[in-house]
Length: 200
Image (cartoon, rainbow, N blue to C red):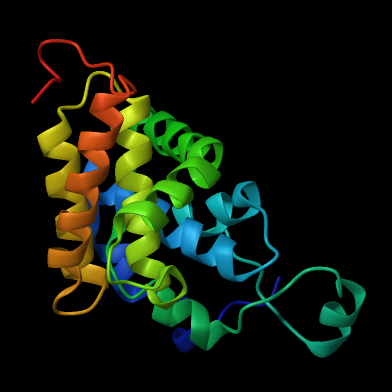
C-alpha cells in the first residue's frame, strides 16, 4: 500500500490533536444542524444523523468512483476539511440516546408545533420566519413536551443560546417570545408533564 504524503497525512490536524466531551448543548446544536439540513433537502434524518453527528462523510476520490456511486452525494476533501476544522466530539451513550430521542420528538410534533407557531407569532408571516428560528422553536417545544426530566426554563434558555449562536442578532428575542407563548399554551392544555424537579 502506497504511503500517504505529508499533506494527506496531516489533512485534519486540528481534529486529530483536540477533542472535547459531548454535552447536551452540543447535542442540541447537532440536532439543529440535522433538522435544518433535513428541511431543506431530501435527505432522511437517519442519513443526516450519521453524517452530521458522527461526521461519517462520503469522500469523492475520483470521477470514476463517483460515477459508480451516483446515488450517493459526496463532499470534496476541501469541504470536509472545513467541516472538521474544529475539535472532535467524544459522545457518551447518553448523548446519542438524547439526540435520537430529541429528533424523534421533533418529527412527531412537527405539524402540531408548526400550527401553534402560526397562531402565536402575531405580526409575523410564518413563511418569512427564517428556517433556523423555526427549527429552534420546534426543538424547544418538542423538548418541553417530550422530556419530563428537563426543566422548562432550562429548555427555553438553551433555545435562546442556540438562536444567539446560529441565527440573526435579534433572533433570540423573537425565539424567546414565541416559545414563552407556546409554553403557556402547552401548559394550559396540560401537554407539559414534568416531575417536580423538571417543572420550572
